[in-house]
Length: 465
View 1 (spheres, helix red, strand yellow):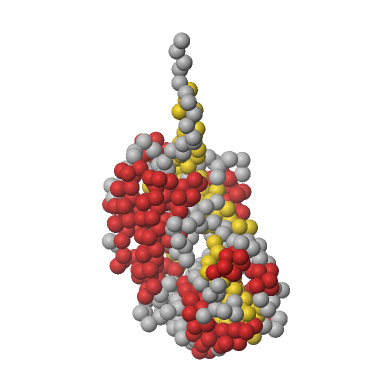
View 2 (cartoon, one colour):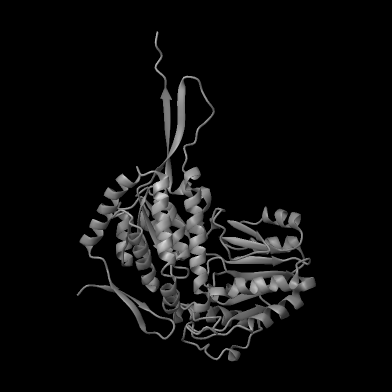
């Protein structure tokens, strides 16, 4: 009997989708077809590649009405917010298409008489994208579109939790008329994924997922000498200075902490507030958090859906219980969120004070609807605490003083530093991290450097006489 992969919906624990795993011969044929197609594709002008990719984006957007409820059923995000994912998908895709011509242009040094010199950006070959469930379109597009624009072929392996997202990508590229073999969506087991990486099938791996998953990618790639792009999560901090505009800051940080049930690599997971604002900030933050409606994500009234599965929710519950046992204070009454129940994916949001860096909730990635808030005396203490983490994906400061923000940002170990913003990817800026948040870079013109290799041309004129 052929092995299958199942998507169990967090909405009601039902079997939502089931697909057969690719047979070994099918897998081999897919990569052979990708290799052949890429040899032709790399010679296609960038402008023509752009037309194919733009048509694929249009085709994806045309499926928006079907995609929104699929996202809710597959991973639990409220349907009222599902449309925002495709808006972000479009923003990133169109930006990367738009900057490709200049980003991929030859690099020419100063003129040298008698010589023609330039550096060309050559595609790597086959890019293997391993995409996660939490933002199934936003995360995958970071590598899929620019990889194709750079002249590569792409094989996509999507999470079992969001099987239909991979199929939507395939339908979009098929509708765009992309030459066969250039983009392929495969349903794979973890073992097959390991074998693809360890057996030389691919020339670049783009993985978004857990720290443990990233370590597994490195083991699989050992000895293959292929680059890895690893986005592995975060424990993203926010610092609220004494001069922050309180209502604006509270509103944005509550959303940054609890959107998508906190299941975002760049969600706000810890907040440091100047003592002058601390009590008022906590009161406002907790009050706004209590206004969330936890429930069926297919209900338009729901603003907080279930987590992806019961195990993920129980992990967060354990962090909360451990913190409370060590002296933290909970500001949200779970009873006010009736669907929240142990052993289910439905989990009430929680706001904790009285926390410290001895607690797991302030040190380990939660990836769920909980945030710890600590009071600080000023910039120096805040900077020290923000840097006290093995992760470094994003960090934010909330202030009316841009000069102070710049100075703080220069001292924070992070991939992206925000002032008065959080939980957002600007496609014009490099998306990267430090420490356990991973390595490599996507988005912006810099992202194209990781999807190509430099090839130098050094041509000397023939001297006559």
